[in-house]
Amino acid sequence: MENATLYTQVRPAGGELTSVLVRDGRIQALGGAAPAGVPVVDGGGALLLPGLIDAHAHLDKTMYGMPWYRNEVGPRLIDKIENERAEKKRLGIDPYRQSARQIVMSIADGTSHIRSHVDVDTDIGLAAIEGVMRAREQYRDQIDVELVAFPQSGLLIRPGTLELMDEALRMGAEVVGGLDPAGMDRDPKGHLDAIFGLADKHGKPIDIHLHEAGELGAFSMQMTIDRVLALGMQGKVTLSHSFCLGMTDTQAVQALTDGLLEAGVHIMTTGSASRPVPNVARLRQAGVTVCTGNDGMRDTWGPYGKPDMLERTMLVGLRNNFRRDDELALALDVATYGNARVMNLADYGLAPGCHADFVLVDAETVAEAIVSRPVRKLVVKRGRVVARDGRALVEAP
Image (cartoon, rainbow, N blue to C red):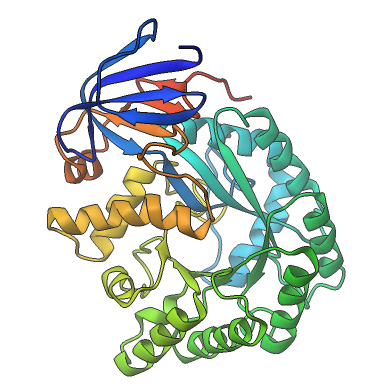
């Protein structure tokens, strides 16, 4: 049998020992003996997980591999945005080089897919889009990267940005990004008009950074829900961060949750330690799709973060007070199947017929894998080993 490998002695999600037959980049069967002539890889009793997914990254921003950045930025969102725009030039943060470095680290940690927001503004133009596209092409056999054209410095307040966003989508960015319609552009209707117009023109989904907290965030969220319903874009819009869902007005949060469900709007949370955050368990119980990602890491915004989605799963669990094993399993489901639903990934998972994207880790249970975050024993992408013992089989610049 050509283009086939049998992985033996593995435990899907911590279950019973079995084998996984991979052929032509897909899982063909679970269990059974090795067909004649098929190479066998002994999993050694390792836990088998589907490929981890980072549904909210900023590949163009990371400073991994560069000298330590002394952070003296102010406390406001606009302080961080303006500081970053200036420091990119001063420090020479090359979007190709830096995104390639984070991509290779992500491969080593078992990530099979990334959705990355990539800055588009009138200072850098499309340089970041071009750089990240170059990196994703270089590593396309090891990982899938989806790009969001992201107006980090504002859309309407910086004339010319809308046209650059339009061009980024023509170049191949898969998602229309947005940012704080009221708080940043100070024109929520105009902002939503612009990004929904781009989505309609290019046939793309939308992912909006919604940092706005409390009643302001609730106002922008409700406007987005109304727009989705009016335009029939159910299931095609994600609201990232959504701190307003962490406010103490439970009746207002419930009304927003009902609207999110009706409109099929997804919620992305990183489990931020410093802001009110959406309640993952309540959203999931209500039927809202929740996803997660590592956000920015080791950049001019802050020194924290690693491209390890098991670590992110742990942080989401900590922020949501997940202690039981079934609660931690829910957190991992968010970081795998939830992320896959938001990114509209076909044939994702560990069932026969799915793409052979999976990770082997030495852990007894899913919960242990999350809290211990062991070195990834083996990472497989479309049936090919791409990382072993915590090291990617490709190099970064």
